[in-house]
Length: 416
Image (cartoon, rainbow, N blue to C red; front, top):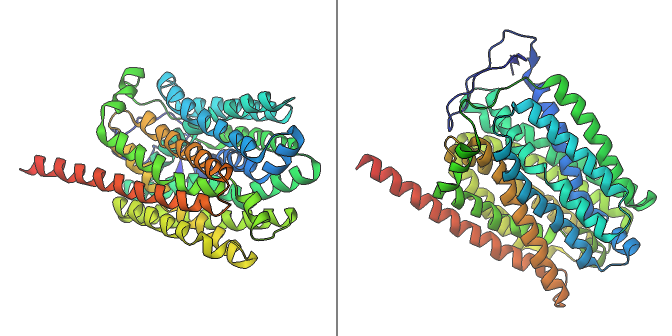
């Protein structure tokens, strides 16, 4: 990749990937800029998924049930749902690098608060607050990443930025889970706060200064909500990805109860999940640059099929580990495509459109954790969330079919 400067530049029109930045200032290699964004994603990915790895520890220490501890996952997800549109709208005129730094500072602060929360209620509130910067960081980060490369490589650039989220599941989540098991679950969130400090330094040094979009403001950003395709694409993510979280939210007790893994073996399997997510994201970025709609079709089909096979693999250690790897890969295939599609269909409201993708995915997180907890509380066993998840994946396929039908109708109207 080439280098970009640190000078303020003008963005391309909404819906079109910006041209390559000018090189009139101090030059920074594009890969380093993307690496700095990925480091922020690494911290966010670690905190998003780490709670699942230490769920039994949190439940035992705070004297709550496993499903009640699972509500901490939902609290974080709901924070993302609220924070993504709130930050995108209210900070529309803020230069993008300054906004990224502010979001990382808030992320670091609230994860530190999670580490020192005195009880379940305080931890619940801290997890909600920790989720607030999540969606806006990834949304603005995706726009920045796409602006650094030619249009035909934008999905790959977005996937590189999102690699931090997936690599977190190879290194960040297993490491924080291991620390949580040996030093207490509070060390998990303290580790995330340290990562946040490092990400702040990297973004400050390596990400170019980018102005807000010309004419940006709350009213312009809210215009995204008047576009039916924005809502349909969000629904694809919220429903289709919910099946993924229905199982993964309870992966630690599932592996220990069904596959017979000791607690010390769970981080190893979580690392396999991260490897799958990383490969899936890289492949998904290339698929989206090849064909945006097909990348989403393929991703939804793969995650639905994987969930249907869970009862066959869940009761033996090796098949269960392989299945977790496949779940990570299939679930992440559609992520770059969904992110790029939302930027495209949002028109002049790119910031809100991009941020809302993560609201949708965390609606999926909350929905999946909630429905998975319901069937577990009802006594159906640890394979039952996968059945619910496969149904959600099929529903996502249906919604995307409707979205593509609307696309075809609109194209026919333009050419008719």
